[in-house]
Length: 585
Image (tube, rainbow, N blue to C red; front, side, top):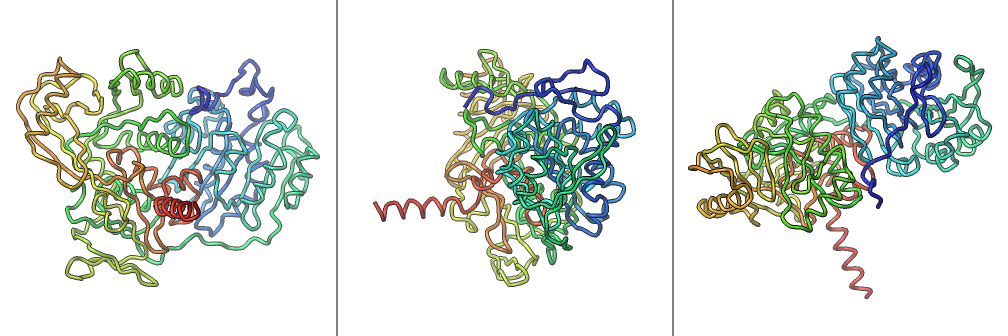
């Protein structure tokens, strides 16, 4: 992996000419100098038969090669708001190798004041340069953008279709051949739905031939502005009215912590009725601590699960911004030894927008401090929480019945999602309980939250110190945990004086053997989101968004490899492979 392995190279822009930015590395414009928005409408929206093509559809998915400034996204979004079906959901999945930063995009958008409202909302969620898919959700408009920041072929291999329309908007083929290769055209065909349409500005002969070889019916159409012609293509199967997976009833979410609340939030944004069930109510378990720190999981590697967990952290920070109970705040992380200091230094080089290494501590620039109960309540909204302890579920052909210890049915639903943290252990054999404690002490907290294995931050009028990690469901004696906290603070933060204990909290987390979450279907009627360990607030929102997309027929928020790395079946598959290897060895 190179030093830039976790980040894409930024766009190199030339603003010296009128009409908008040019890509210095490609010698081409991002949009027509005559009128980029009108070009978007003519070449891509009309070229793909929009808005007529999405009429009556519950889900419609557009894929784009070349996100650029995001102008096509704004044009599509505007049309969807004006003419989208009232109960529909629109996914735009775009690919961009060289992302623009927020300031450059804002400068480009200034040319279209009529789009300023949408532009500002897009800019508010503008992603970092992390490689892999970055999810932006606008639930009030039933619209999601997923930007794959990577090389085009690598991104296409990680995407799951089908897609109903394609915007081919890379730079000119003679300047950006990778975007217009036969392998790309073939993959576009493989990811297309029946009757999918393609719009593009170019009529280059090898593009026409490449699309035709991939299986599309290709035709020239009148061009926009100075271009006499453009291309449209259709996947050669008669369009059919396809409904997304229609849930024939509500979804029951078992668990009232951050995983359950995140699922309620994502499902209700898609118009799905939800039933939330937890024996203790909202935030009764591991999500009920007095305070928490939102920080990323850091690994010195570029692997699918690393990209996914970093994208999840960014997604959570965007989702929580402005919500009750969340305060964006820098967090400092202290290395435990020289080896970890070296690792932090390398990570800061790889992730300069997220991390700064001072030589003594790692500054986590996009972190935050939160009130767990307030965030969970905010995400769950006004959904009613059924207080019941579920012991088993009865899966029937058309429903799932949730039964308590006496065999009484407390709820039934079309689909069940187990998001019960430590309580999910008897639903999945590879979930392990991990007990933990926190304590709040009298005293003046550090001006900036600090973590080092333990952590210290403000909680009310005191200092919160956490947390213990003890395998099993018993957190251990209070006095032992308190002594450990005092010793840890005295060693790493000697300027912080801890007074008496103002409050204690204990809970049981769910973890897995590889310390990664489990998310995905267990059967046609049951799915799971659990195993979040101590990073539930960083990882649950994006994983819930991805699972909600699966259940409702939307496009994935995670790459194919990331879904496989977090799949609930992975441990059984590893055991089967190991058993087969031993048997043949």
